[in-house]
Length: 178
Length: 337
Image (cartoon, rainbow over all chains, first blue to last red; front, side, top):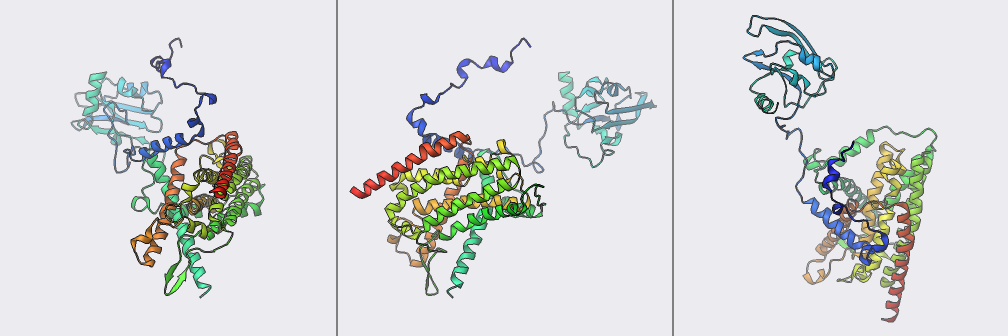
């Protein structure tokens, strides 16, 4: 690394706290009690500051569109957009996706018979979303994933499908930023 | 009847003390959370008010683990010593003047010992046995280090504590805690007459109760859990409660010695009936004690822990000379004024 980290560049030598030796301390500093009173003032004022805690199960966080939640298949007019090209399975670094394609009478000609994502393997990198030529697999805003067994963690098509209306924010974000 | 009144007094005081101690654990957690801009435990019961109950149930249900090479007998004995000593000190604290109930004057103090202060000093120094024995009997290096630190720390602060009390004793002219409180009528509180003694006594109390910034015997980052590393279940719970009981008890001692005990300045001028005056005085005592407990808690989140050499320097080179000086000045003032 030839470049120093950006933080050290922004910090001028003046902003560093000065080194204080014990012999430099004044009498008031030495008896320590004014320092304690000062510290107490700080801690007591902190008590009345607003809290940062989110009361989780009641108050939930709505992620911004840039958030990469669990990957889902976009469902449009009752059918998934996916054409089972297999690029997502190919690009997946964790080998979490399994796709089996077949032919269909619809305009898109091909569809996935089986589309499975193993959510225990998924690392939420979003490569599948980037690789997809049809905008058919995107990262949703859902971040609450719980399973009781390893088999439950393999999400099939019925769990992965999500309507396009729900994913509007993410799709717009992708069009703007990709 | 002679036996009944002390029994009632003991059970009321014990019940109130244990209840207060249990809720002090909750208060500590809530205050700590507030200082760190968090909320703290607020799920069990209304605003977390049943949290102590849940904690106790959890501790009782846990398995009692004793290390293989540990000395079983002493390992069991140590938490009992800690808790018993912490509770026993409260026996001599006067929490109110005498009250007249059903035509009988009842002294609001469990045991009116004429050497109350000596009793308190003796009992608080016995408290170190619980910690040291637990450290030794656990057969673990962390526990042993915690126990040794504790005994060294208590030794060095006991002296300053005893010497700073002598100033109070000289002013009151008695070792009886009741007399000491009675001499602090009006605004003649010992905190105003003995400010240096107050500071040294409070610092020594912090060290005696192993509270921050002197909690070296259980310094988590260095000693895992300190002396109670090898304890679990109810025995750990006893140590935990003993720490908080010590905190409440030493707050009560500080209140009695320096903050006027149950005295409310000039309450006699208000012209209230004697019964209500007594009730108000008990309440005043409780409020003073609890404010000190809150002070103990807030200090924990204010000052970083001392290093071991700093602790020893403070104890022997600052606290001890300061309390001796305080003693000398008090003696001279009493002698020549």
